[in-house]
Image (cartoon, rainbow, N blue to C red; front, side, top):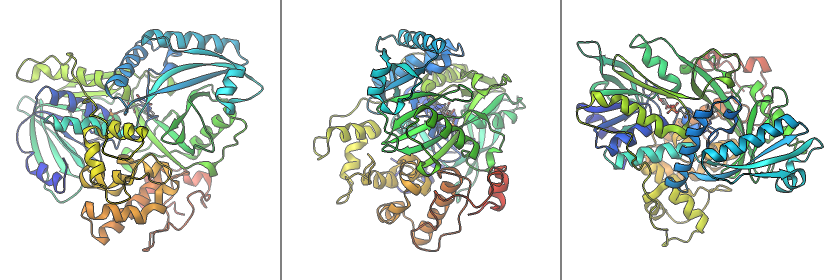
Length: 568
Ligand code: FAD
């Protein structure tokens, strides 16, 4: 699948009439494509950037009911999500894995009783009975970093976690195997209307360049563009309904903040719930929840200076002995949550429920969570059913994730590594390992990922740009210091040929990656360093402080991206 030249072949075949066109290659669009393909519907998914480029690669990586939503009395959202979590743990084995979560409480009786009720309700919704109450001593034994004079005790409960980008890619690739078609870097510029004014297709541009724009007809067009949903809705005259809330995370080395479990934090200033999560050999801490005032076309969102300080403050308050500082951050990232705007003063109080709207034939499905993608997909398709010829019942349960293939007995890897690869690559895992050159079935530095994953993804993983490979297919740009720049010679040696790039293209791609990394994923993002001159070393340590003032760095990103005014 997706071998050299794949985008061009697909592009040349788009001019037929489709049953369904899905716009947006995040988790919502991927879920719709997967379910529609399982039904045998002729379905096309188009993504303006890379698959999972939007919010779906920038989440907290939890498959969860959202125990904190119980505090806001969002019982239906929580119950629905807990059911979906249990389903994914069964069906997406090794890709979605169980995660123990600790919820400490301090010398505050009210919160303790609130938490006690929360974990019981949470388990009853699953239904299961796995939570436990920990004394202060037991909690400190489980997680010594929580030690503080005010600590009262805590609770243990269970959720689940995943790699969000891989989850999206798995769904899309399984949909393609089931007969669906997906293409990235294909942007919907306009919606086509029939003589009655109803939406009947799309005007599509090639965002990777080189192929002519085209108009494509479909019986149903589904808008699954997450935070961009209002943009397409405005083309049918629908009023804006979304509030874009930015959430940022910081990633720290595991040895700096070793956590055996996910730990809930309450921010000392405003009591907002946050998480410190063991993820892929690192510790992920977030999230913030703020109105995103920047233009979506201005560039990828990034964690602002204030958000970084806010996250550090929460971490240092809950783990007083650790003294985390900016210099400890490996990387950062920010995503935009599309929520329905009800004008609540506190963004965290806005409901995380999803919606499905039909406006002049355009079906929009948005809001919700990664965890509830299946429900969202089925409801969107249910809404589309009357426009499709034939009888469909999308509420009927179907598999979204293919069963795991047999263990990889031909390869010398430990059982944990095999499980990891099978979860991520399913039936492709064995081909991935077989395609490795000597020494490539070895971990990349301290990561779980193997070098051979880079080769395989470059060969047939739908990679168009270097950032697709290093930020989403394999997350080494987030997990290694300085975006993995020290590994670039070996990365180049493995992937340049597979991607068919000449030297000039390689350098252009590296420059593009470097800019994206510095603007949106560096420990203190927002700076663009001087251009590369031919060696592999980025000129400055990414942890070095910016020369610009704090205020200068946080100006509207339009300034940052349009004239590069903020430079190191
Ligand atoms: P997106 O992932 O944003 O996808 C939309 C896609 O549409 C984008 O890739 C974009 O490029 C594309 N697009 C836009 N315009 C066009 C166009 N004109 N043509 C073609 N394509 C277009 N949920 C959980 O369950 N667990 C969590 O732990 C969790 N943590 C979160 C943490 C944060 C900080 C945030 C912000 C959200 C979190 N969520 C979580 C929520 C979850 O991540 C989102 O609900 C989900 O990812 C939204 O997916 P989506 O597919 O609707 O949108």
